[in-house]
Image (cartoon, rainbow, N blue to C red; front, side, top):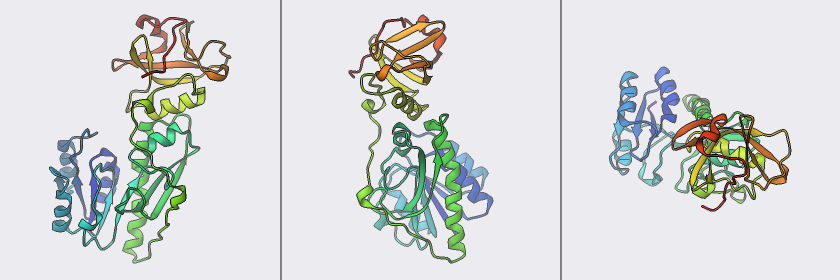
Amino acid sequence: MKVGIVSNSKICLPLLSYLSSIKAGVMLYFGSSLPGDVSVNEMAGFCRKNNIPFYAEVDKKELYSWQQINEPDVIFISGYAHKIAVKELSGVPKGMFNIHFGRLPHYRGPSPVFWQLKNGEAQLGLAIHQLTDKLDSGAVVWEQNIKNEEYHTYSYINQAFSQLQVQGVSQILTTLYNRQTITYKIQAETEARYYKKPQLADVMINWDTMDAKGILNLIKACTAWNNGASALINGYELKILDAEAASTEADNIPGTITIANNKFTVACINKQALNINYFNINNTCIPARHAGFYGLKTGQKFINKI
């Protein structure tokens, strides 16, 4: 069986390694969309080392000719930014499946890990579904949830899901090899929700409306791709990379800073407060104990207007 992988991201690497190790006849179509998290040369070198046929996209229309020339029996999409015209991929006998790093149908869209973390979901989901012309709407053939832990961040979950997807693909391929019937679970459209790619307003902390837990969720969702959750003070952007709930109540206006005893504390709503452990200014990661050296002072207040 020939297995085609379509991707423009390094999240496909564990899957490629697995398929290569079991001699699955894997081939990679590497997309050209930018910005990417891995270069064409890096992916080409990986494939060459593992004897995986590699094709680098120049134009997204090349996907259809690649499929027709190579005739994969089954195709898995793992991190590909372009919308695919399913009807143009004719002759894929075992099916075409998209690997989606979010629970379906509740988290459709391009950035499901971000939104699951920001919304503070107790369980974070990954789903493999049938590829259709409507984004993320195809019948689910495999799904898995993991508990949302305090230490989970956007980067961590993407790495964890890149490993977890291997289990799903392995199960699907085993079913196909054994000529068994794949179970298709139709998504409930009444429960479907689409989340767009995060914009600036989505990664900004609003101290007047967000409680401490909500801010901590946003920090997790923004680390490390955005270098933390964004906050505005003194005319510049500060990004919070790590924080924890303070043990004492805060009587100050939400967003007010207190610098004392090597601690950088910010008041939140409901008399809550956060101790900031690490923050980022101008792409520089700074421990909270050095906050005073960067002009931060007790009594200063973060603003909410972009």
